[in-house]
Image 1 (tube, rainbow, N blue to C red):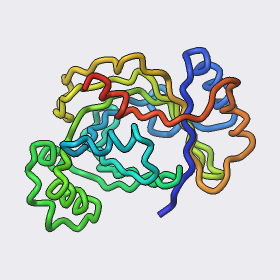
Image 2: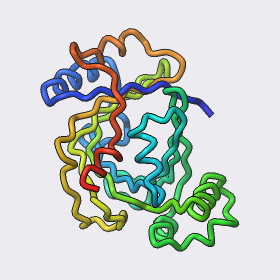
Image 3: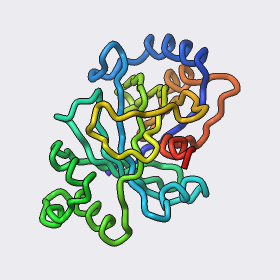
Length: 223
């Protein structure tokens, strides 16, 4: 498993236009995009005490969060993900879910997970059983992704972040989501062992500093 470096910057609409122009000149668009972008819907999990949310707000150095995710409303490709952060480095573990499996988890029908061969699914079952981990809220946004092979670099621009409040009907296309307050546009830069200078220069915007923005935290703005 490879821990990766991650930068996040809050940017504005003018910055986004500049970055798209720069990045298009040196990077490739992710091959899964439609007209250069795609829609992401995630369902985040948390405990009754909001452990994941509190650890993010408090800046806990070692933390994790679980989510189920799909792209462009395509229920044929659903993934369960666990994102861990240690000393500023990130690790993402994932496994595929069927639409029926995802719905069962949302509904709280999890006994079938005990005999599953996917370790991440068994871990989720354990934490749902012991810690009370449960689906908490839907997070929607639009992503413009770029990739660069040297350094395994991935640069994304995320905007139109929307919250499902406490809605968890993740697979229902008509589920209403609302703008998550005054949410900014987010530039994310991820890489393995090194960040090539050409990408470092391309993503540099004067006055923009690395931050610790969390879409899940932003989407809990109303509760």
